Image (cartoon, rainbow, N blue to C red; front, side, top):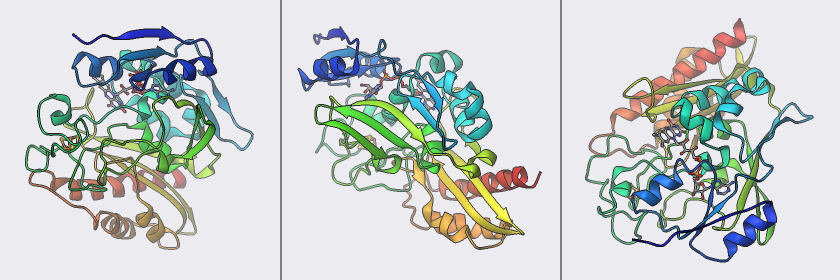
Length: 330
Ligand SMILES: Cc1cc2nc3c(=O)[nH]c(=O)nc-3n(C[C@H](O)[C@H](O)[C@H](O)COP(=O)(O)OP(=O)(O)OC[C@H]3O[C@@H](n4cnc5c(N)ncnc54)[C@H](O)[C@@H]3O)c2cc1C
Ligand code: SF4
């Protein structure tokens, strides 16, 4: 049995002060990830700081047409907020395609970003896993790796980041706001997720006592026709094999702006910047979409069971771009 202590914070400063008292502290929001990991015996948490009384549940419109989402806003509330549905349909859809209604009612946006990979070798608590126990190896490299990543991998870890909404948020240049003992920080969404490299145990550039207080999404007219598609082994209650957030702007048949991000294939929510660059200035047609998607996937590193993701991700990207284009044209 491992001892576990619990305290409840009433304000942001208090939450940080409580977390700072022990390096084994962790914040507790909905608990849908953290409690699972503690129960499975694979979390090092020894002290839980419950943050559910903090006033961080807002979903507000920004003057530039963007959004300010509190870290404790529940996934279901964000998914159904009228301004999210209207102006950022990909964000709403990504949330609704994640988990189940009961989980979405409990799970917070801040917790969603910090959820851990679903790699079975990390979660079984005994297999070699550099993320769980640095230096022990990676059982997935030569194991069952059908669900694992093909982009952003290293020889130390090939686990995918499982969040759906993070894929939509990275496409629209969201910013994560944190407060910690050293003060406030604004972290570009893409930088909030670290590639595994030689240190897969490090997943975010924040300290254990640094609290996510909110997520800002800048106003982006292109997002109005955005789509989020998710491909998985069963239609509900399942993580993505591949997912795509896509949005396109077109003027007289030429792409003037494009956003593309992939889930289920990267060790982090994957912004497909190479594809975006290839698309802009070219024709808005399927052949161009295919070329751009192939360019993005050219850097894929596959393993025994996950090579199928290269083709699936390309098809998903093309389908996402076509779906957004249809919205632009209608
Ligand atoms: C069966 C199941 C299916 C799921 N399916 C999907 C899916 O299809 N798609 C998907 O995207 N997700 C899925 N999830 C994951 C789910 O979305 C996350 O568990 C949830 O979003 C985590 O939020 P939470 O509030 O419960 O976090 P918690 O469990 O409370 O916390 C998670 C982690 O984040 C940290 N944390 C929480 N809040 C903050 C904060 N404000 N600042 C700093 N750190 C913080 C905690 O310390 C902890 O380490 C699934 C989960 C389950 C259990
Ligand atoms: S892929 Fe990453 S999380 Fe999975 S076993 Fe390897 S090191 Fe661990």
